[in-house]
Image (tube, rainbow, N blue to C red; front, side, top):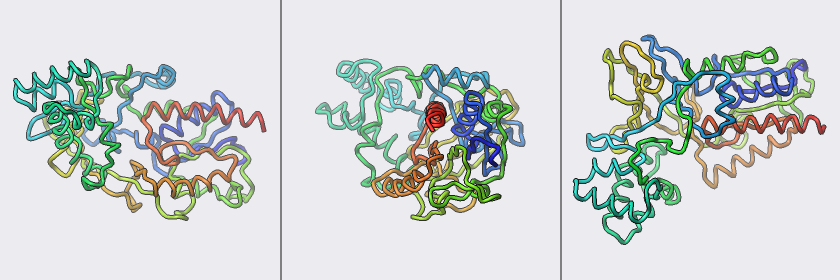
Length: 391
């Protein structure tokens, strides 16, 4: 193992980006390992038995206004570009979310919708994002009712399903960030210049990223298979020697240290895939079920990928508490005072190892969009090289 200058644990967006930069720009010999049998992490996509390109771990859409991130990823893929939109299913009607001026016209009768629209535009102005908590505190009855409608029908029950919470357990500070958008545009990511998915899939993009002479990939391999951690030294199990290179760890930090202090809390997701011999199931990529049903959303993949294929495949998304049993995946960190303190204890253990860097949503116990984690990987690689020169 000493023939490698760096070991990257995890071949998802964080690890693949870091590996490419360390190998290509810093001249390091990099070993990438992953516990799964494939690269690309949760972005992994593949053709199902019907030839439909699906996202096995749930839908992923790239969106950014970061020119540097877009140019970097564009080295490894062309893009199927589109403006992502989402509808919520409410009482049998499809309502654009985030809730906007078009949504008003669907859920309120014509005259009342026009009156609320006039008040929203007059008080806040076009293209503004107004937190629903602000609307719910308005003196004006129409504005209060609009905020209450969004809270009850789009936010409250959806959040209860997604996070497994009771209404009284939902933090008002989170509610305050949920907007009504004063616009007639239905874009889900209106501020982002670039939106879409890799033309030939995320897996193909990351395969090309990792296809570099300085990079070796080993799948079905855990960090614990190769390395041990003791007394501030990262040791190679096969020889017992201290590993002198850089370790970039993107996996679950509590698992790296054997759940020493207990398991960090996450929400997991179960995906039920269904195929239909029809051109379209729902006529759009994503429908959120904010009030009814046990699942939180249905994704129809051909609308994400732009693929032309006979039949269509959907997935239904069921949230649950992560328990760590085989087959479960920790998706969303449950950040609270207790869990952040627990993470801090694990972070203190990791900080004892001067040549280890933590990168990504599991290692850092926080959520990242794809563009943000690519940007973080760039900064990590630059910082790692700087420390290497200084040492």
